[in-house]
Image (tube, rainbow, N blue to C red):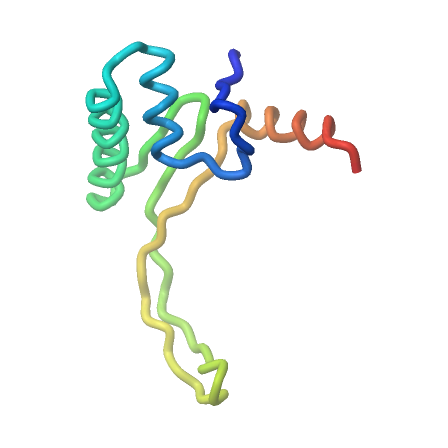
Length: 111
């Protein structure tokens, strides 16, 4: 798999703008069209998750919505007991391809 290059940028964090730039450079679409494509992809993923669906991106991973039950907690300032309400959270499980790439990168870095 070909490594994406992002104009000499430290890749500790990749932003949406970095993805737009990669689409612009690799596919050759205009920046506005590249922006629209990236925005549409994120919008589609967001809509599916809001509907409670699982989003599987082959070779990347799975995003899913998980329900967390209400539970007891404490106010960290006062120590007063409170109830943490139930809620839904988005979880991500990386594909084996992503995990094997991350493991290879970790092994290559000097300690």
